[in-house]
Image (cartoon, rainbow over all chains, first blue to last red; front, side):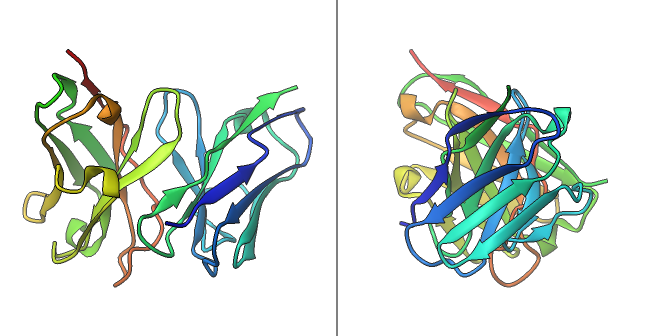
Amino acid sequence: DIQMTQSPSSLSASVGDRVTITCRASQGISKYLAWFQQKPGKAPKSLIYVASSLQSGVPSRFSGSGSGTDFTLTIISLQPEDFATYYCQQYYSYPLTFGGGTRVEIE
Amino acid sequence: EVQLVESGGGLVQPGGSLTLSCAVSGFTFSNYWMSWVRQAPGKGLEWVANIKQDGSEKHYVDSVKGRFTISRDNAKNSLYLQMISLRAEDTAVYYCARGSSARNVGPFDYWGQGTLVTVSS
C-alpha cells in the first residue's frame, strides 16, 4: 500500500498569511494526487486534482504542485473560511489512500 | 446541480448487518466511477470501496474485504454498500463520492453529506 504522509499535522496562521502543506508518498505516484478541504461536521470538498489542477469554483489562492513522491498545497493570503483540515489522497494504485490531515487553525 | 444523498446509517450490534444507499442526481450516473469513503469519529478519511461505471470492476480496502459489498443500479441512479459482520471499528460517517468518467478511477469531485454508522452493543 502507498502511505501518504502530511506535514505538519497542524499549524496556526493568521488571515493574510501564506500557508504551505506538504504531502509525501511512500512511492512514486506520478501526478495522481488530490487535495480536499474539510470543515468540522461537514463533508470533504474537492480542491485540486492531478496535483495542480483546481476543481471548478475553487478560489485561485489555492494552488498545488509536485510529482512523483513530493507534493505541496499552498494557500496564498489565507481567508477566514480557509480554516479547516486538509487531506491529500493518491489515486495511482489500490488501495486509494489519504494522508493523515493537516489542521489549519487561527493564530 | 450534482447531488449525492446517503441514507441507511444507524445503530447496529457487533456482528450485525446494514445496507447504505446513495441516491444521486444532476449528472449521468452510469458514466462515473463511484466510491465509498468513511471517517471514524475524530479521525481521518479512509477509502472503503469503489465500482466502475458498469459494475464490472470493484475494489475494496483490505479491512472490509469479504464483509462489505459495493453495488450500483444505474437505472435507479443509486449506489449501495452492503455491510455484514460489522465490528466496532467500522463505526464511522460513510460518504459516497463521485469519481472519474474515464476508464480509470480518477479523482473524487463531488461528495455526499454522509451517513453515520455506529456499531455498538
